[in-house]
Image (cartoon, rainbow, N blue to C red; front, side, top):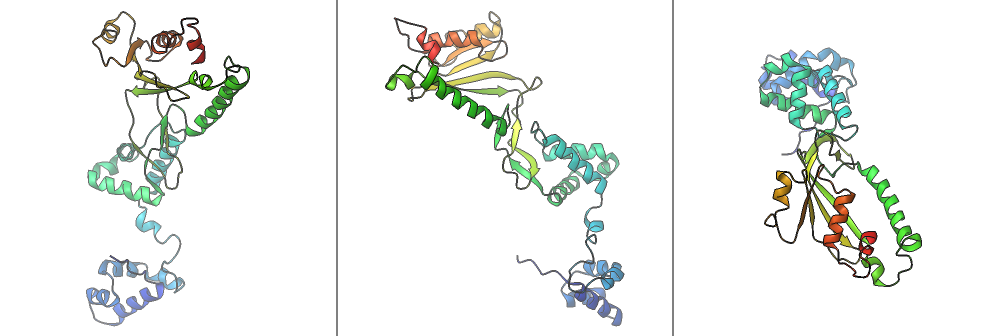
Length: 298
């Protein structure tokens, strides 16, 4: 439906004069000017300010709408500050349920008098007034995107230097050089995987969430490795557990999981040096002349 044009102060004064000069009802005058009777009552309440304002603008002043829409400025300011502080380091998501909880904390008496639907409507209007919206998370990890870019640059330069200049592969030529270079990626499964959306400002180019802490530790890590020439190694799954304990006995059972996947346990569900070397011995092809080559090339 097309939006009706806004009324200028001049038109508002004409409607008020018509209402004052004639014996017509408010409903009739409102119908004549094409507005609702509640709008006419609001104009009548602000008649003095409208008369003092310029006739061409649509509002009596820059603060004319503030008293109508923002009825709880202190509450909105506290909610906005809380969102900014929470999202400042990109550690946590902010949902509408979080805002409802903070609303009940900052203004418990007001929250108790409203229904859940009314509180949600207030939250939506608050988000719109402050240019906030529910955004889909674009990056989720233990580091922010800016930190990851710096790490990636340092990593790529060090790999190129190791392979081409001063590493053990510098003297190797042909396809065997990059067939011996593997890249490994880790994916962790956390206790709380966080949501897919969060409240953030409109226009933000990236919506990051830092995931992983002592409280929200992970219980399983999945490692995937492939060579620079495209050869894939079997997936490697590390469960949180102590060797010899029930979890370890279940994971190391030959009947556990798929035969094409390697499984093991580690206290923090992470691939430390011992776990890594053991996996390399099992997953990579061995050279009878030198079994240590595959270790060093990974």
